[in-house]
Amino acid sequence: MSEAHDIVKAHYAAAERGDLDGMVEKFADTVAWTEMAGFPYAGTYVGTDAIKAGVFGRLVADWKGFRAAPDELIDGGDGTVVALGHYEGTYRATGKGMRVRFVHVWRVQDGLITGFEQFTDTHLLREAMA
Image 1 (cartoon, rainbow, N blue to C red):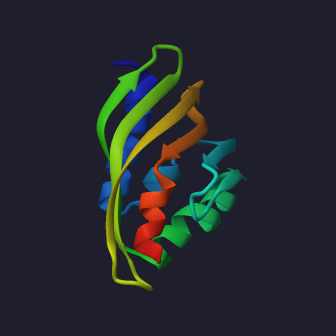
Image 2: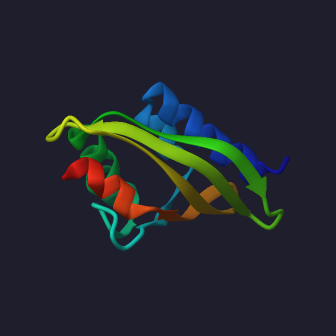
């Protein structure tokens, strides 16, 4: 597997451990993280601090046991890695759980993550929030 594959795999492993520093260790200074339209935290966040505050911090605050679990990593060979997986967790405000499929597209250049884009069924996720 490529270096890009290993970097993305390490990100998910750090997330599973709850290791925020490990999750962002390979983020480029100008990493662009895009949560798709319709997702509760939709938008593009640029830079580690913006991603921590706008995405990761909110997920921890709003969801109990939130996980982004990759079932498969597909190495594009050009610094692109695609993850097929699922989200799961319980929305704290409603007590409702969810399990929703996702596709994540990662961009890695010179050993650093430069981009991330999320695709998921936002309707299913929002059902847990209602």
